[in-house]
Length: 204
Image: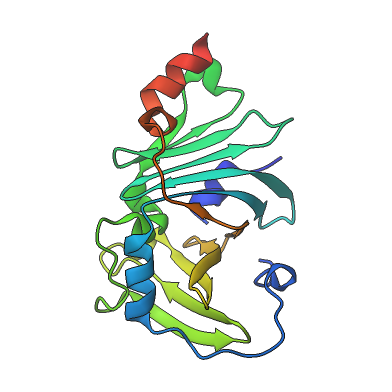
């Protein structure tokens, strides 16, 4: 059974099956990656989630920066993870009766890429920045909240695109999310990220 807490609070190798390429590329500078993330206002994509225990789930991700994200898991799972208004809510079958499990967005390193102004050059935020074939991998943490864990962001270039991330919690549990081709631009309805509305809908 998929542990939803490890999705956010928390490997496999960096899912090289999804990012194989013919030749190495130069490491993408941090300021270029910051500009890319700041320009990424809305996006949707299919995703594959690989959990620490090797289980795999798939679904659709919705991103609306700053501060909002949603993961809808494919059937037979009845699960969604919503990020909005500074909170993370995990909905599963039990949520219909008891409501979602909630905790602050600041407790997950996803907050780094959902900030209004992403600055990967901020002091002590990036603890690793390397090139691996066609990929640039940035390891980041919130310097003011290191207990939230760290995130490895995997990018490719020409053009720059976020391809996956690996979240590691302070207990060493890891969760990998591999993205499909991001469809960017346009608007996403605010109801997708409304935790109270989702809770009410699941009671019906």
